[in-house]
Length: 201
Image (cartoon, rainbow, N blue to C red; front, side):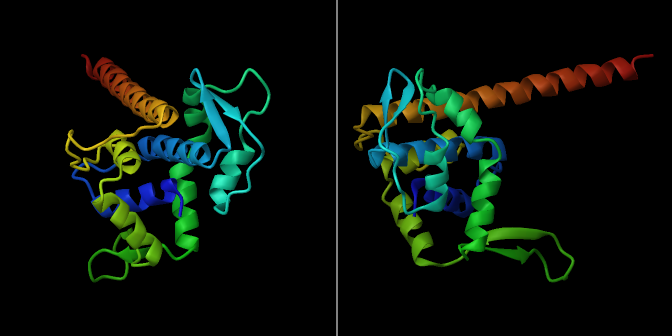
């Protein structure tokens, strides 16, 4: 399992009071993929740009797709640009893949057959691995989850991420999610102002 898959399952388990936005999760999943590519030696980070190495052959299909979409000609892509480009609708891609692989299942809420459907993780070895990683407060997973509003409760005294490139990606994910929230708030204000114009006598 990849960090992105672990993150998706962690979010499904957490069931935060305020649901995680699909856009937020998509940005974090793109960051998780990039972190795994860094860990596998497929890319390095140079001044906020993603520098690809030899074309990797990840075991994970979606991670392989991410690697195939890297910009391989200079000037290389900025991390922020990668998050927005790769992250487009990425949460839906991961949900479909995990459902297909039997990691997620659809259940109906309530007893009626026409109740609304919800998606839940299945008790599989991969799910337990993700849960263990979360329980251990693994810094990368905790950092990504924090970006989408899930508090892992990791004490500040515990060691954080020691890899500068990974730290850079985590910071970029947090910034992108904050930027997306700012866009949402601006649209809400604009829509409210527009509605008030129509209500005016």
